[in-house]
Image 1 (spheres, rainbow, N blue to C red):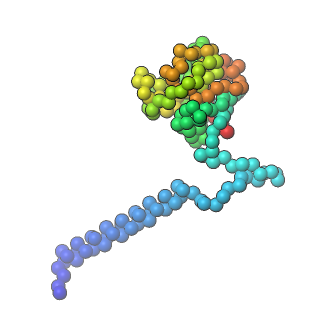
Image 2: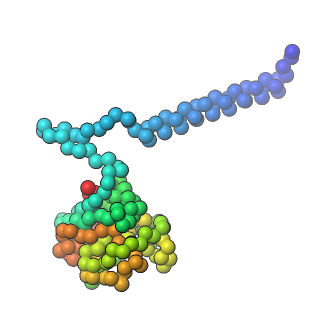
Image 3: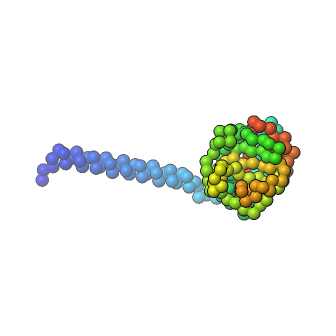
Length: 199
């Protein structure tokens, strides 16, 4: 049997494609394994004879503490029972450092709002709204949205400085300030978020 040069070239091209495919599959498998992480159990970090729990990205978020670059902080409870997707998204962004060095771009007598990656009130993506029966009383934490009530902003959040029940069932309420309302009241336009710690 005689193999023509064109048949040999085609065969070589097929082998190369198969090798490329195998290499790409191996790389993809490696990335998948790296993304899954180790299956070893993590008991925490040992510091000075005391073991402290190591927070995991998926750990249940129940509280957020917003530290300001100018000093001071405020803490609010998170309500995953009322707004699970909103709390998960907020906690994930906070844990990743997304909010670090972003500003409060809106400050009025009744509200402070921050978390916009553009710093103008126009940044962030759209995600489905998550309405609930929590009332926007003094210290309530909410998520901003645009004109379409079906969608929330995925990053901008606000704290009301006075009872604002006109927002009830119009905006997603996902928490309540438990400490530091005096710090919230002192926020000025342009004040920076140093970091947001989730526990």
